[in-house]
Length: 193
Image (cartoon, helix red, strand yellow):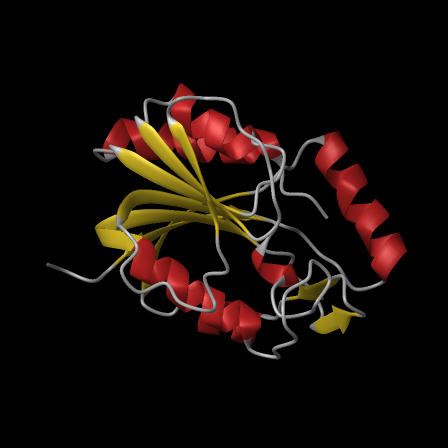
């Protein structure tokens, strides 16, 4: 259940054309593709938050090995945060994190705290009939999604409606029996200075 990179690219293009962006952060992108996209669109510095050791060799990227559930106080605030195909795994123990039924909600609150007033969060989670797939991921109902994005203003939604997007949808549905789309949401922090 990976987020669609084309949709993320379009979302970043839309955001960076409309909002001033200086510094960004990415949560949980082990491959580095989303921080690279941020740099491509002119973000000068990107902080990469990960709970597992990773290597990045770019002077504009800074790795922060940190579990944001433990303490996000004192972290810098960013114009842009990407959290793509990550939130649904938090609190399930799959990646060495502690078990927490509300881990995804806690991380969502930590992400909001990382955003500057008016800052943008680009987020993706799988939507469908709600369930937890052992320790792999959560499938989100509209109710749980509202809990995650509470306090954020929805600006745009991107979905892959190409034949390949439909193929991914049906493959996920066959594999998990419950998964729907995994759209990319563009959300804005409504907190004012």
